[in-house]
Length: 200
Image 1 (cartoon, helix red, strand yellow):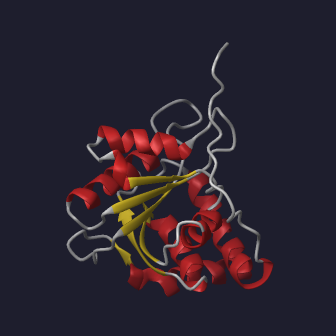
Image 2 (cartoon, helix red, strand yellow):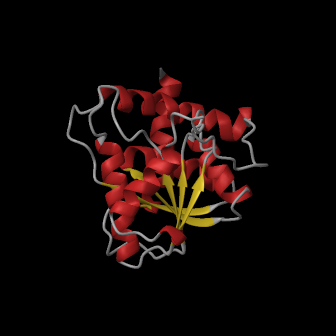
């Protein structure tokens, strides 16, 4: 328990100066890395984490704070494709398709960050997610030699997803172990979409 508490404090403390809440204060970057999440909740309702991330991304693009967008998420089967869902949402928000690149192997935040550097050759970018998630992404990025900042998308209402917050509280110690000790292997060799199979 002490280790978990210390890791959470350390991850937030090390990254808070790089996490921006005001679009006016946010420095401009050519590239944004948008971290994926499911479009809908398990009950089939609209996922507010997803909705607010997409709205934040569209706003940053329209305000000229970013020029290109890497959409990194999970595409582990033909029936689940976070990057494609994000692209469709951003197209509906008026973002041109030619500024978006889809990363289909962002299975975890660690993978998304490392692949942004190793697969897409970016070591200076803006992470877009909710505040609680950005701290972990920034901690990973800075320990991987990446000059990253982040923009905090609108947060969800209190009590919206207690499970997500608990999972994040436990994910931060895992991130500390990953970058300093475990060094998990992220796939940095390919970027292949698992598409839905066409009917006969």
